[in-house]
Length: 459
Image (cartoon, rainbow, N blue to C red; front, side, top):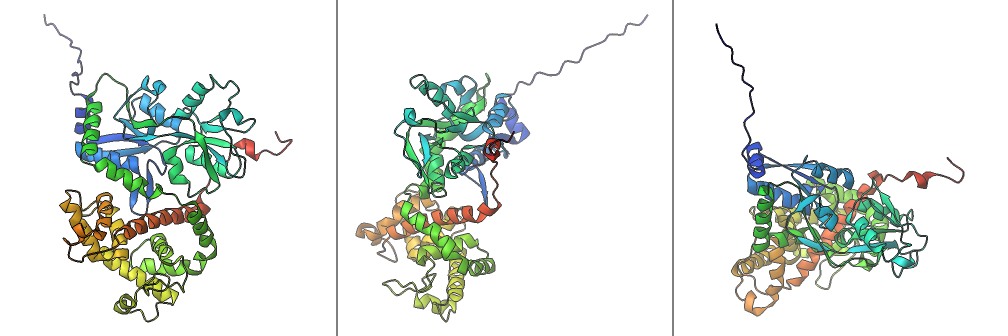
């Protein structure tokens, strides 16, 4: 008599922690938002503060970054809560309500919540004075949590929660007069204010609040510990400050009047030269928006512009540079723009290939303004001060030292007005961003809420 024994196969228990599993899979799944403060695509590819940080963290772990872009904040929080993603790197504020559902990494930036209104309307003095005006905010945002808290002391305070549109789109609705007010984080408004010149900050509704990565809540803290270690490192070595500067540096000193004039010149002057900028940029492998931004910084697109030092034309070429470039008439717009494009492409090719993008681009712009040899001197001073000569964040701090004898006597090319290329680069960065935004506006669609499309008497 034979006996057959049956065994139930029990899967082996996975003893590896979450961080080990991520490394085994070779993939870190991060969810973010599509916005200027988080992640977006530019001419050079993916960009944005959160993207740069997430990519750096994934590289440090030795895995590839799988980036998911949420359609709404609701979607982002749902995917994180259910464990479909490892990390939400999306400019999230740490709040008491969110801490009940998620784990948070270290703070990397602070922001203030601000009430935004259209300058065509009277500036509200406080939240109690909003009256019947429509205040619309992103649903399930930290702004909603703040308003719920404030309603305890302002019982008549009311608002509408928007489940479909993000903060950038609500800013546009305020700009277009479709809603009266919204709330935005200070960093979001800083990057958007050049696009919506009719928007203003009425007042802050919060103290500075911390931003941090959010993680799926679990008893396994291996990934959280790795995130903490990562941020400790980049704070200590200055890399976090460099990344923040790269994304926000050009927006720190907003020039309302200058931006308003620039917006007018985009309509009145640029059309005359747009095709010329495009042709020259294509010939030398440049982004035409960048070339046009250089031209605007140089001459405000004025073909007869002249400086006290003798540079002339739209790209303000010196007589010597024009001669070396083979430009016969630097006052002729097509020749000037072609010469500027050729000259800038030559500088780009000379730049140290160890300098990463976009820092290499910003340093090339500085060299276009102050001269390549002076830029090399500034990088040398940066190295002497034990900072990174391949980082625009560090080099721009040291460029002004070219005007100090203590430092320029140690250089090959000597004295230079080193503060000028710093302002030059930051202006061009702002012009470039705005040009791109305006150029893409014709192809941009904004979903208009149904209630704004209804006419009186409609169903």
